[in-house]
Length: 325
Image (cartoon, rainbow, N blue to C red):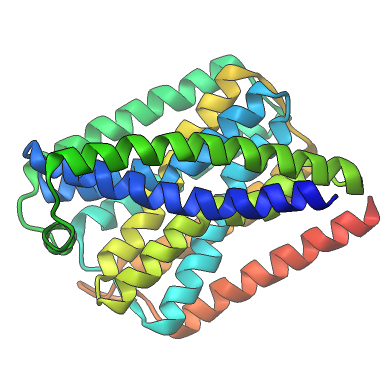
């Protein structure tokens, strides 16, 4: 089992490195061609930080491991909210200033309800995958419209500062984009192979491996960028990373994987994983939307501690499930 563990470890390192290069290069290239900073933050960065989940789940579906594909998508959503936002808000409470992000919170909640409805009958068909992709296209259209129409927004200001700090020539941006994507695909193949080998070696289901090891690994780019953003006081970027990634995961990642190979879904996915994801998403909506008054949307340290505790409890339950198998 040494080689599979080594493949997973090396795959994680290369995955984080390549995802960061891919996001950096694509954002700089988009800026060079005149894309507004808000649109870069909402679309380019959201797509880039979800690229690991997208590639890993697509490869897993192609290789006949739907559990890894689905577990990776939903597990990453759980990790993004409970682990990443939990940790970052413990370090510094996250104030939600962006009006665009406040609109994305109910949108993500509605998308999560759609995911729960699809999984309820124990399968995701190609037609349902097409529905997810259609909704994803609609969300992207709405996002692009928001990015083009909204000139003044805290997220746009924070993104503008980041782009100025990481300005680079177009040639270097394209090189980073292409290199990052190539290494991302290679490292994802390595990661999926190692994870499948570990699962078979220990008799653990693909779903559990996807929900735990792979979900955390593919969420590392979001964790790194959110922690860095919160250190700089860029609260909206930290939250925007998670909202954009979760929208991509729920719609595009599952949609692509389901389009490649229809998936049979165990009842535990709905009763355990989707329910945890739904509760966390609803909690994020309540914390961040600003029901406490105008400008009061924030995730304080106590709420961050609750999110982080939920993540620990959820993973402890998954460990118990492993021992019961």
